Length: 227
Length: 49
Length: 353
Image 1: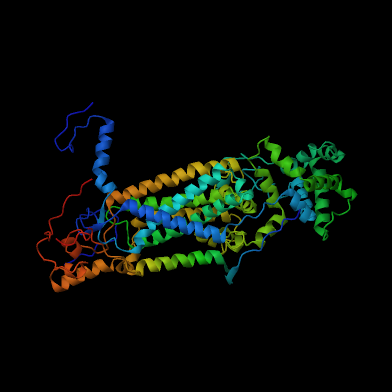
Image 2: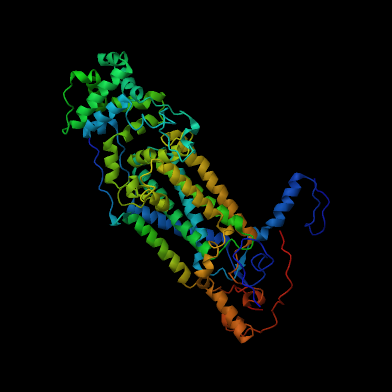
């Protein structure tokens, strides 16, 4: 099963689709880049925490949503644990958007698309838009007055652009599929791509950074100290 | 059976603009967090070992 | 001379376009993920425990007909007569001419055709009445009449209901034909809960599609009044709001804003225009790195000088003193020997990957 291997393993001969894809992936994202142990010294501001915080909120959204959906849409009306889980789901969504938008503000003021990072920016905006769609479908599943009203109002926007017949906000079955399957997968996939792009390109350096800057010229690991 | 709707939330308004207090708090928190994130000093790298 | 880098997205052969070979610090990705999850999880649990979440019970036809019988009757009459908003909506519910939202030649609403057909007279009045064990004779009288006669009857009864300021249905008159009997019977069905059941089971045993019921509810003033009391209607920034005190969807602020301002707010095709505008603005946001001016704005309001102040300060110090700034930035007190660990600024490297 093993093919001819160069001593350092890097220039392994590839002769299959699989091999070619593997080589391409490993060149773009070797393990050291995917799971690094250090980061550039300019990543030293609290604004950098908001991307990770958004991800954490997203994880809480998924987990609480899992509990809600496994118990069926009527559960949270009649169970106090259900009601608490619903509250967790609501507040994790509020936090998710809160943190994600602050993350967006930070990335804008850092002009984080520089240096060929435009896809990172675009996937971020798409993640935001798809998240809004996911939240909208979630509100439709509440099976209470709010969901009745949102369905009644929301239908107008969708019908006006001609998709209301296929995205029927009053059809609980349809909305369930969108909200617990398609849109979480959509958000998740885009977010994974977004994070991988950050790993591939690295965190964008400061605006106006040059090769003559002190932190470029004197390169060492601050956690080890200057050598 | 009468639907007894709970009281509407607190709404603040200036002219045509009304905002629910909860939403206003969320927006204010976002702005405050953004400002704090920019201004609060970030811990320096700690020496390993 | 130092060239001021542009804010372009393009990858040039500069610091932003090359992998970073400068100073680093330790970074524990998994530890950060764990801490982030614990902190955010704790904050969420706290907020949920303290503030809970709203759960306004839904409106039923039983509750509606009990709370506002005249409004229920008026709405039912409009459905029977085909004059309600739903009956006049156009695609995807029915075929009403000229009902769609159009912008010049653009008529997206007609794209699907009548894919969710709702015949309001049948779906909301005649159909449910026919499920009764003793179908009122008024049903046969109605269905055997001509459309013109039916319109006359419903028109007369609608007028009587509009003049009714009380909570009891008006006395029937000859000009109204079988309509008062139909509506009274329907009201009886609603009060007993049978109408909720009949509408739900129109789709069979497993009702998941609530389209007819939602449309019928929305045609009534009672439902609209409940929403307005909770600040949920379109002209109350309602898209952003939630019942009670809980924050709603604050991120819909811009979408909601258009429904408050002229000329958009009073357009017949407001939904079409506003959805298109929001789509365009979202696209603009996604393509922002390609747009000069918009992407240069961060340079004019330089918040980045606050974010990266340590970096810029070190560079300033180093440039002004002409020597290594590591002594001032190193955490340890041991003297930094300048020169020994410096890397020569080298010729631009080709990027990997």
